[in-house]
Each structure stands twice: as structure tokens, then as C-alpha cells.
Length: 342
Length: 207
Image (cartoon, rainbow over all chains, first blue to last red):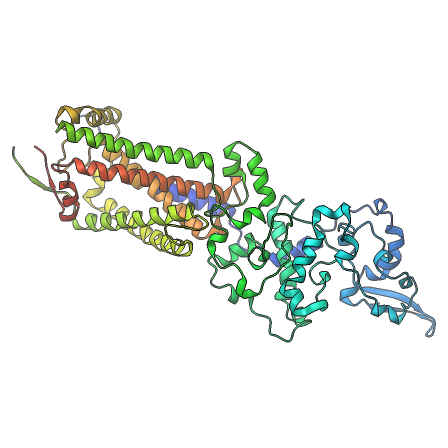
């Protein structure tokens, strides 16, 4: 008698679950790196900057000798000895970050008074008014592509400006000494998100900085956003400005008209739909890249981003629609023939 | 023509099947609604679709565990074991019956008996759907419920994208299966007899 061989399908399920668990276990990191830690690491990474490529590096050295570290030393002629002092935190300029920033080719006195060349610095310099972005970048054709005028108009209408008037300057969010343009050149969207969200969180999660401009209690960001499903994923996948700014047109990369909280986006479909707002902001450059690449596998599998409802693939949609339609038509024809032959 | 009834669907199979069918319908509708969410109109509002889809998916997994255990420990599991020898020949025979024989009023090549609840094509498709695509849909579904657990890259591609692609592909195949499954159920003794069987448990045999 021939032995019967049966395929037992239960094994298939067990194998599938094992594969899934293996994939999960292979990638599992017991301690996920929190965003703040990533940023700390980012700041700790010392770029191997060759200072000889910066024409003002030598001159700046005079300032950075003291302002480039957490303590400074000077000769006190009255006491006739060397004095070590701690540098006030906000006045420390990290040379590594400065020389990788957009303003790296400037000398300190391009923006600050020449009188800083003397030490002790004259007391009246504390009253020095600082230039804002538009003071240098406004009306300059070289910077026209960055739309500084539009940014300025948007900012003037934002809650930041209307609530705090001139107290709120560009430097509240952008540090002139470290600012580095990100989204236009950065292929890694996740880094852009961390970079941009840190700008907001610097004040909105730091009580001391927040209260520089208001006596209000800083709202708890996590509690305020507890309505958001997969909160952590949203926080690490999109920028605050995606929902909290008014996007008027396509020209500026980051809208600066920060809206009052009552007008923030709360409708999922603004992003999770075929006309996702994200495609015109965060994923603008990536979306163009994917559009220009014709192979659909590139679009489907290699894109780092995935947004339910917004990630579409024309070829796959068409194939599945044709297949499903074919099945339905096939069933109808079979059914009609069966009835006729009865 | 004699008529006899076979008790093929015990109560647990019927309850599991009913819940499974309902959940699959809910999951297909909400899944379709999310995937093709329009800027203005949607079948189900996005946030409601997400919640309903998640809850239905969780219940589907629990319900699947009932099916899996039931088939592991009761006689019902026998129907899902494919006999390796001659499998292609039997599948072809059944396929020929559906494409030609049925119109020539031929007899079904594999009549339903207490030992053979499914014809070869049924058995083959049920195994594929219930033991491959349904597990795939809930495994990837659970991963998407905890997206942070998904590796950033799987075989060179985006982990999230690959997981989602497998989820949607399985969902799509299950949707196609449901259309065919419902249609084939009209091929009982009468157009509605198979639907009655899955409610009362008794199969009206053709003979």
C-alpha cells in the first residue's frame, strides 16, 4: 500500500510567524536612541574642519579663544595675576558648528561691532542691536531663491511676531552661529525633521527659555497631542510646522506663519490623502525625485517615507484595478452562462 | 434523485466563519478607504477608518487563533491537508469541470462527502488564503500597529514600505478571494443552499 503524504498547512503559519519574529529580533535594539540623544551625538561629532579654507579664521581666532570654550583666561593688571573665568553659556560659540554653518565665511565683526576687539569689552556694546535675516538677505538677488521677503511677511503675521512683537526675532529660532540650511540639500529627511523640530522644542519643551517671553506655563507637548494616533511616530516622521503653519504657496520650503493653536491642522486627511500637504512641504524634494525616476519599484520600495493614504503607485493601482475588474467580469460571465445552460 | 444531508459545519466553524467574514468585510472597506483617502471625500472618515481597522484586525487575529487551534485539534483540520500525490491532476480536473463540465451538465468530479468537504480547487485556495495570506495580513498588520518595531530596511528596501506592500497585497488577494468564494457558493444544489448550510451546518448533497 502506498503511504499517503499530506502537506500540513499549519507549518506554513508557524514558519511565517518565525520569520516575522526573526526579522523583528534581528533589528531589535533594547534601548531606542531618543531624539535628544541623537542630537547630542550630532553636536558631539567634531567635523574635521580644515580652518585654512576660511579666509577669516585667523581673525576670528581672537574672539573664539575665549568665546569658543566654556572658560577663558585673562591677565588682571590690577591684581597682577592670571584670572580664569567661566564663559556665560549663551555667549559660547562652538567653532566646529560655526565652521560648518552657512555663515562660516564671515568674520565676527561683520555682524558685531569692531569695538569688541578691545578687552574688557566696552559696556555700551551690550546695547548693540542685532541684525535680522532680512537686514542682510532682503532684496538681494543672490538670495532670491530663498524668498526671504516672503519668509519675513509670513513671520510678521505669525503668532510669534504678533504676540511678542519685536522681542521675537529670527534668532529666537535660528542660531546665526550654527544655522545650516537643511531640507534643500539634506537627503536624510529624518535628520531634517529632528533638526527642525528641535528648533521648536528648544523653547516649547524648555521652561526657562519659554518664559523669556511670557509668564504663561509652558503647555505639555505630549499631553496636548494625545489625540494623535501613534504620537511618537508622528513626532519623528513630520515636523511641527507641517501642522502649525499656514502653507500659502510652493515657493518657501518652510512656512513661517505659525498659526494659533486653534488653527493647527487636526484633520488627518490634510496629510493622509491623495493630495497630501506633505508632498508640497516635507517631501517636496523627495517627491520630485521619485516622480522623475520611472521604475515603479524605486518608488514603491526604496522611498524612505511612507504615509498611509498619500503613498500611491499608479502602476500598482492600475494592475490591481484591472485584475479585480477582470475577476468580477469573469464571475459575471460564468454566472450568466450557467444560468443560460440550465 | 435521492437527497441527503451531511453535517459538515460544526457550530465553532460556523461561528468562526461568520465572524471572519464580517471582519474581512469591515477590514476591506476601511482599508480601501484609508489607502484611497481623497482630500475631500472618503468612504469612512480617516480617523474612524484607522480605529475600526485596528480593532477589527485585533479581533481577526484572535478569531484566527480559534480557527488554527480548532483545525489542529479537531477533525476539521483534515480537510485542509493536501494529499501531495496527484495534486496537480486533481486541480486540473476540477478546473476543467468549472470551465467546461459545468456547462455540459457533467457530474462534479469530486462530490462532497463527510471525508472530503472541499473539492481540490477549494482546498487549495482555502489553504492559500487561510494559511498564507490571512497570517501574512495579520502579522504585517500587527507590525504596522507598532511601526517602530519594523526594521528601517528589509533586504535593501524600506522596511515600512515592504511591510505595507505585503499587507496591502495580502488584503487585495483576500478581497479577490472573497468575490470568487461568494460566487462559487452559488453553485450548490440551489443558488442559496450553500449559504443556508453555513448557517445551519448541514450540507445538501447533489446526487
